[in-house]
Length: 606
Image (cartoon, rainbow, N blue to C red; front, side, top):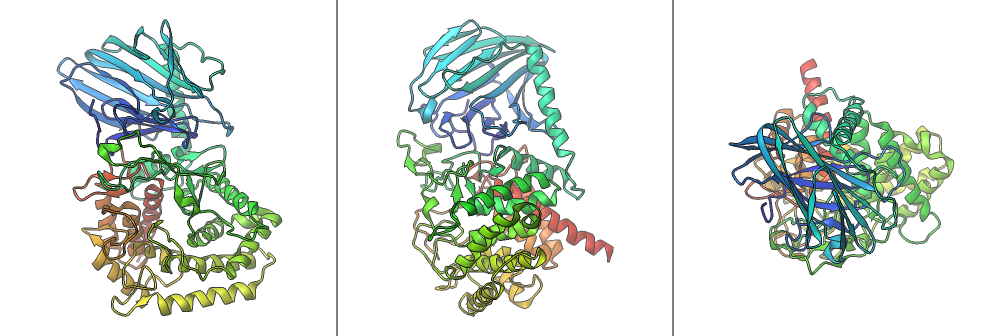
């Protein structure tokens, strides 16, 4: 077992309320329950000694590994090959099919000998509450109960296990065709214990879970050129969405670094209004209207909560149930992934001002046409009130889309998205004949356009730039043609695209911005931002540069990990960095694929 495997050396399994990472060595080294944003139970990825893990793998040291997903599912297979035999560990979680929050979650692990004889070792070491809560072990035959103050963990196996301090260890030898298994169930301490398990029952559950995922993906309408990558991204977005509310989290993990050994280590297990809003378009592009509609309902509820307030109408992020309280604390007892500290739980950026979120919310609602169909009169009134408020509030410095901690600035992207908010609001009011102060919204929209093109334009770079006080380029502006602020083939946009190409693109990979040229209040540097690379592909396709866009898109696919997943960034040596997997990256992959498919289809038709 590696002390800290590469971030990308993992597959993701989940049940639509929480998720776990499994390394290609058969180790569950990240699992939080009962929700994505709950304290961890296994967190060896953040501290090998204190975090806890669940290993289930062959005992032999001379083993090679191969990890894959069963096709079109979230059932993860880790295959071990040795001179004496070939074995597999199959991991999955039964998906939530009710949409009701529950404190009971089960991780299923089945092992099988494919050829020869394989001796498997089980080593289960939970560490509750980020490793801060002690637990007691009650071992009853093949069931081990870990008692912690807030949770209980039940490990059930189909073979004997033994005490190892307050943890458990077991061994089982299988011949070709034989199976064994274990299930780790988390619930509240006074919850009913899970029913006994058998190998046959676990095997049946594997097939049922596989059928669930294949059935869901079959409803996709995507018929483009990259079905495997798009399908895997769709499943990943689904895995990262909290089914009871329809709210996606930004990533399954916390604390994984943007620079090894650095301080850029954030908690991404929350719902960003921006990320979720853009996911609506990606889901609709694939035909998943139900998932898109569930999230727009969540957005509607957030707007309604502050409809009568005098302050900001939206917070930039929330918990998956809509709770706005996400205090940030330092887990100083964790050493961090390969020494990357501090490890943060919660996110202080919740209090930042980021005015672009209003544009993304309106973009989501306008793209889906959901206001007229689902929001209703009272929902529209809340949205219109937010735009009335924004008409008096858009012209302010903010922290911007990248959540910099170097002070507020007049970020160009924030103003562009305020323009998009009014533009979308005007279209919705007209399309669905809703009451609105059209004159006021039009005045605000036009004033923003004039300001951006006057103050956000750099004569030096011949481009729109990051903020009004400099000439720094910013890849967030790659969304400009998608929202319609500038025509995708107009001279102003093509000149901006050329400048981004010169300053931020490295062999088709795209940086967000240059921290050295535009200090963001943090030490260190970062890799290329995978979201921005896919936004670059989208912008290239819209600009008619399809050959260049296709090259960048297909080259980016080579940076995916072995099971098709992306973290947040690509490091200088091609390694994946940041929280994993990142929903923003996968939704932008879908957006880029559908835009590029459409552009290539038009070219072929001509």
